[in-house]
Image 1 (cartoon, rainbow, N blue to C red):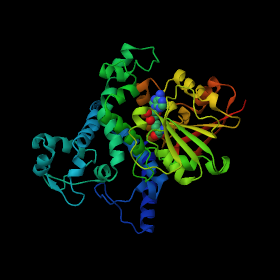
Image 2: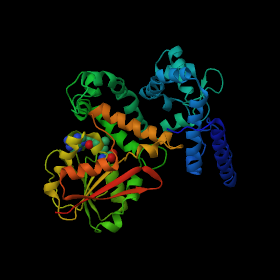
Image 3: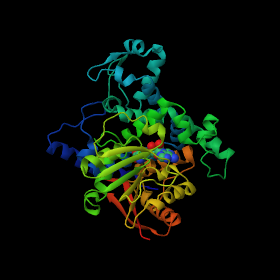
Image 4: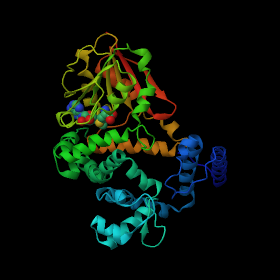
Length: 425
Ligand SMILES: C[S@@+](CC[C@H](N)C(=O)[O-])C[C@H]1O[C@@H](n2cnc3c(N)ncnc32)[C@H](O)[C@@H]1O
């Protein structure tokens, strides 16, 4: 893990803050504060400097606070989660005007909560820069709270994580105690949290609103407009050489494609591709938004043999990470009867870098994000995020003729990796 001295950190901060200010000056943009809801995204102005600054600031905090101060902050971090979860549960971001401020009493009336409780929750969220109190008892937006209004799909993804899945994370110690040596998809934190024998996707579909939040949330997580912090589907389009590797009328199957948001982006970029999105009945039957004419939707359980024979591409995006190795290999194997020589299996996932790479100075927040996602997978399905070698082993275990060919990444978002295996009988 990174370890720099006070002097080293202060020089990193000073150097990068100066670079960022100069870039703002050059573009004639005034320097924003954490309250300015029309602030430019500093990561877009100078991504390298912004990343260095954020990592150094985090490390500086760890250096200057005592262990007990830091551990106390960690011990209550679930209120970071819960406070924003409550804001979303009660649609509070939409009730606060983007311009100006609203009194706590008026907000409490609109929300339907006791003013005293609402004020305490808001004031906690404010400590995380979510809303501000520009004058006593008045609430105004900050960039973080405004993002919850401006990007409703992203807010849906956050609500799923902060409200629906928060009890799952909290139940992980209990699940590990109950089932210490298991990789079963029905012996994980979801089962401990909700006392159910359902696996995660079965549990999701027991409640149509929760299922809808998941499907919209996956789309929100993948939005390409730069407001969400997830995995933009535009980057998937940019990362793989779709246009040069495949025929112009390529047949693409988006296996476990959810509500089809990635396929829609692919169909718009390549209008002569013929794309089919496959998913569970609960997902496919709920799709009610228009799609490009070259996208079709079909119910298919990806544990069953693949019914679309001889496609050019079978895309599995954020599917394999949901499953332990045994099930992941079975999902890949179910494709094999359909493959023609040269068919490509594209697995689009986070790829966990080597621990030595993640422990370099300046990588702390990226390491944290990947590790968070990894623990989330452990909690919901005893699944995991994998290294490149682990993906290669899955392809080999599915069938040695499924030859791992290459991994594609784009510099703009190192989190997106498309692993390509080619059927080479
Ligand atoms: C994490 S989501 C990924 C969705 C989409 N590919 C994306 O990248 O946003 C996993 C998807 O797998 C689907 N899924 C889970 N079990 C399935 C099954 N047995 N057959 C088909 N799809 C399944 C889920 O419904 C969900 O849409």
